[in-house]
Structures are given as C-alpha cells and as structure tokens.
Image: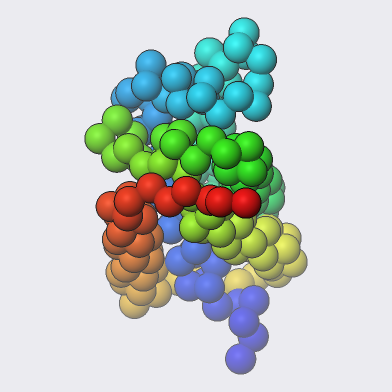
Length: 184
C-alpha cells in the first residue's frame, strides 16, 4: 500500500487544522479588544505594536486555515502553522519563566479565559510538530494520488470532528484547573 496515495492521511489533519485555525481566528476577531489586551499582556512586543499584532495574528490564522484546504498551498500552510504555533508556545514559555503565569493565553475567546501553563506550551508544541510533519509529508506527495471517495470524505469529516472534540475537551479541562504557581 502506497501511503502517499492515501488521501485520508492528508485530508484528515488538513480538515482538523482548518477547523482549529478558523475557530481560533473567529474567537480573536469577535473579541478583538480583549485579544488586543491579551497580546499586550504577553509583553513580547513594544506597546505600539500590539494593535497591529492583534490584527495580523487572527488574519494569519484565517489565511492559514484557507491554505490547508488546497493541495498547492497545503505544505506552505502547514509549515507556517508550525512556525506560528511554536511562536505561541515560545511566548507562553517565556512568560512562565518570567513568573507571569496569570496571563490569559488568548486561545479561548472572550468566554474561554484560560491562564497560561506548561500544559498549553506542550499542547502548542505538539500541534506544531504535527503541522511540521504535515509540511514534510505534503511537500512529497505525488501528483497522482488516489481520488477520495465518499467513504474517505466520511472518514475525514468524522475524524476531524473527533479530533476537534478531543482538543476542545482537553482545552476545557485545562481551563478548569486552578492556576498553578511555579516555585523555583
């Protein structure tokens, strides 16, 4: 069996990242002022840049979500998604190291306040690793992959919904945990 010719192995993670990034961008844009404050709270950019960053980050997420949909843009979208998620993880890790573990991560929208914690850093690094693997995988796909049938699409939609459900559940569990203080 030629795994490169198996469309579900490409379409399932693509659908998941499309949903994840699309929802993330929507959360940020619908509560833009809140997100702008969250960006400022990270203290990784000069104050004058936080407004533009609060516009560019959800715009980038929305564009990356669209990039995952097409064969020709999937590999670059996957690579840039990995870079974006690793950047988010780095900003969280830096703030945790500075003792600022009270910051809202900015990943849950206005209704999903959640403080940063090491588990969120690990989550973003895991997602970045999967996205990077997809960038490598999709950059080597042959042009003549098998055309997906109805059962493939059913598998993709059900699998993406299941993965998103697991992601949301784990995220909610993390949000409900009490803040933890890191003592050196």
